[in-house]
Length: 142
Image 1 (cartoon, rainbow, N blue to C red):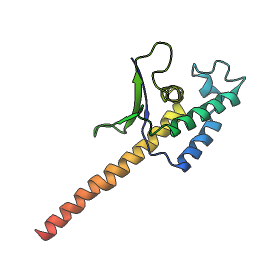
Image 2 (cartoon, rainbow, N blue to C red):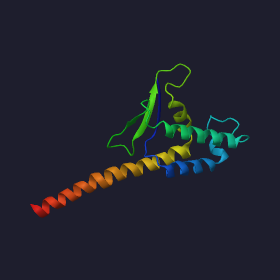
Image 3 (cartoon, rainbow, N blue to C red):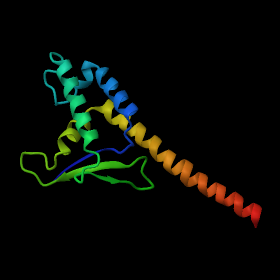
Image 4 (spheres, rainbow, N blue to C red):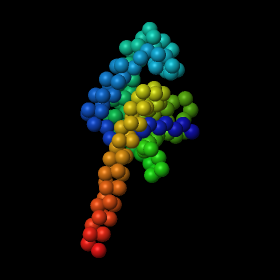
């Protein structure tokens, strides 16, 4: 069974542009450290173009039924997950871009940062904030 994961965050146009800029600025060393591009030093622009293409492909498939979002209150952030049984090919269409994206640490870290921000905003402002406001109303009215 093959399983691929990435931090799950709300993907805005600004975030897509920011990620593309990040990809443009990934040092050669980062790409050489992955096994995806053996010749990254000689072909850095192709590696960056591939990464951008896989990232855009991933963002266009976020509504796919091949992708699930899992979360737990004890986790720092939710995860997108896909996978399945496969012999030689990726088990789902979205698995291929996820495979490449999860191998590049700066991309994972940026997605994780956004996922933490989104989770804090959802839980922090709406969860904790709502409970505090409710508690204040209860003590002032009761």
